[in-house]
Amino acid sequence: MKEKIEMILNWFVKNCARIDFLNKILIPLCITIFGIWITLLVDRMRLPNLEIIVGEKANSDNEYPNSHPHGGERWKFFRVLVRNKPMPLILRWLPRETAENCRAVVKFKKNKDKKDLFTIKGRWSSTPEIPHLSQENRLLKTLHPDPVTIPCDNEEFLDIIAKCDLDEEAYVWNNEAYFEEWRPSKYKLEKGNYEVSIYITTQNGKSFVKKFKLIIGDNIEDTSLE
Image (cartoon, rainbow, N blue to C red; front, top):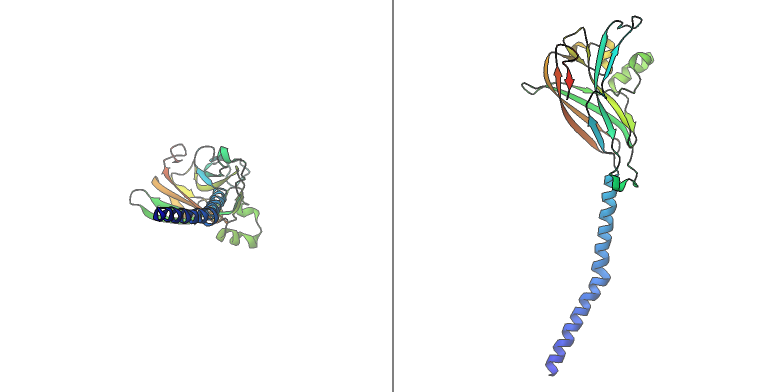
């Protein structure tokens, strides 16, 4: 009988020690780790979330008057829309961070052989045009195009190519195009299918990549970015 009582007492003491360990150390530690994980998850969700979209809304179709250097010509600028998506509806009470200092790199490949053609520094449509800059700033902005900042639920347009209704070919459009009357010879795109890869980096440390199909047709109507 005495031995049974001692066994019961020993079992009770051991389990009390376990319960004490759970209450004082393990459970608080788990709660702390869970709290840190939730904080890191929320911080990550609040980072900019850029969406890269194609469509007619993004493009700009212009006919220029005779007073313009390209008077009598119709030019269509094919662009993408870059939007900083808001938080999911259930988390709208948390503010999404602004995408700071967004810069873009655009790569072109020929679809047939996947051969790299050119890689350019992208031009944001809202940034100043080269002819409107002072002489000393033109080269600087050509080599280092201005970045943009995109607040939550706001958007910017990124230029990709331009095509004139008088030409069969199209041209990559960035700040360099202004120095060759909008037709930079080294960035000429003949008729055919291409792959366009867009890489956007932000100061916040996030990067975004999207690929599109580019079709250069005989005329503007047969040309598309999709």
